[in-house]
Length: 78
Image 1 (cartoon, rainbow, N blue to C red):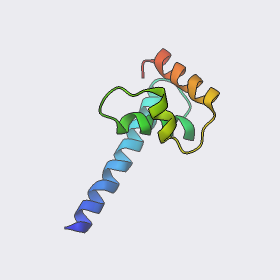
Image 2 (cartoon, helix red, strand yellow):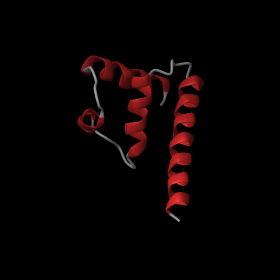
Image 3 (tube, rainbow, N blue to C red):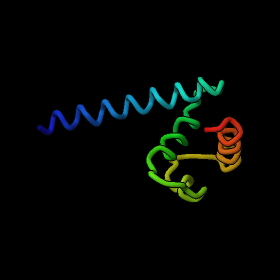
Image 4 (cartoon, rainbow, N blue to C red):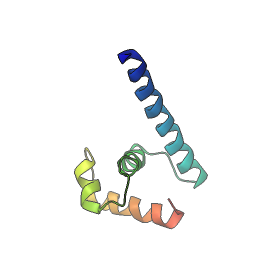
């Protein structure tokens, strides 16, 4: 049973990564590791998030890059 659960989790992670990459491609944006990480943080929440929530959940980031990424996502409708 545990193995089935592990496989399910791995499958969900892979599916989420594929979805995020295709979303960036659809919006004609580069698939940078940072953009994928920000999308992962946004995806992990079931409701609206604050910038401080995003900052707390990022591993390593530059604040200017984060703000530019968020601005780009808003402009592109992500």
